[in-house]
Length: 189
Image (cartoon, rainbow, N blue to C red; front, side, top):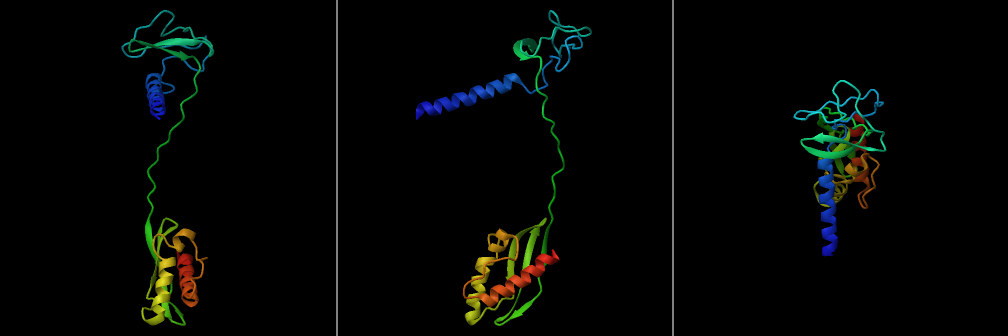
């Protein structure tokens, strides 16, 4: 176990060192993707031209199979004349999503009436709540069961993102009324 941890740590350290020493693609002073008669190598700040380096004439650029040497801050690194181009990065402003609330119509059913309010972030439903549900007698138990299964940020409405919900056992009328108001709220959104 200790050997595995040391091996992984050593691999991570060597990979980090390689990335740091290698630098990013395109940061090299070696001419890339140019024929040997057109390539010129200009020394970077604080560098002096070496043998074969020129700022105006052709430089000695070897084919991609042979390594070349470039000077960077007094350290020699081996590079190849042909490197892959750095990926283009694009930055865009972060998208702002608006949060809004839509309330469905009041639906009357056998045990009373209710309506559903949904909260949307962009086009995604992030919360749902049953409003005005009966709170007395057996109707309260049905209302509580429907609220527990459908409503909230982790309820079935958020999970399914639609009004195609499973009917709550023992609360068919309440479930259907909830789904009807929910569908109307989704249609409004």
